[in-house]
Length: 341
Image 1 (cartoon, rainbow, N blue to C red):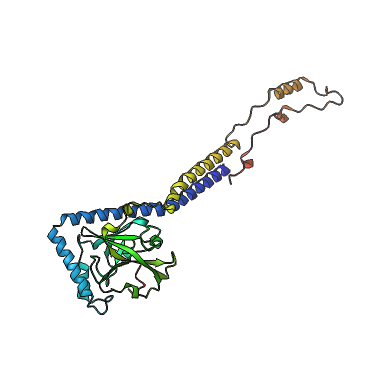
Image 2 (image 1 turned 135 degrees about the vertical axis):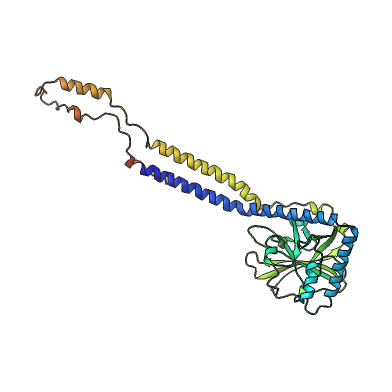
């Protein structure tokens, strides 16, 4: 009985270990899928809010954003604004009152993310953030918008794949029903406090994607900069490319394999327990043994012939069949730049 309990406990622990392993394996993919679904819902809601606004309302919001960008050029310390200028920033381009001002798309690496005001950690855990002190993302001469996103989170991809971009790739910013297209022209890795590459350049329309690097170490910043191009300059189908991430496919393949292995282990464990005969009844005594005992009873005392062994008494008779194993014989089953991303 104790050995059977030991087998049950061992099997339970094995099942629990497999279940935990499968959950850990699936967590990144499931969590990323959930975040992607949530992000797509936010983007759809943003598009609905923009569509519901009148043309005059959209024009007014764009005009306010461009006026903010003009005023930003006069700021001596753009990354440390006054309280009044910060309030102006936070209220501009806030279409739905949630803080979402646009969304960014990177077709070549299948990224589509909402963009919120600021780079607070609660924003960067689920979306991209617009760095206050950079131009608002409405385009125009002498503007440089900077969007930041985390890299290497187990729960969401976010900007994890922008290191795969090369010069000539494009990314798009969708704002108030308009699409701004940027072609990558510079990729740099800098120290966290090096902000020179984020400066506004006269008469240029620039946008930069920022994330941490190296992957998982995060001691430096990866800057992927693009300059504005016409939307019709984007190659046909550029926004339709879908890349299959091996890290997301692997758990889908591995989970069924682990489940099959678990079933095999459980079946073999149960079969071994049954073969060990822990619950088998003892066999019936052999009829030949009973017949021999009856013959011995018919022989008078002292009548045994010379050289013939004395017949055992009935109480000493042992069945010829092997006894079933006892329980004891049963074997057991084995923003100072540091805040950019």
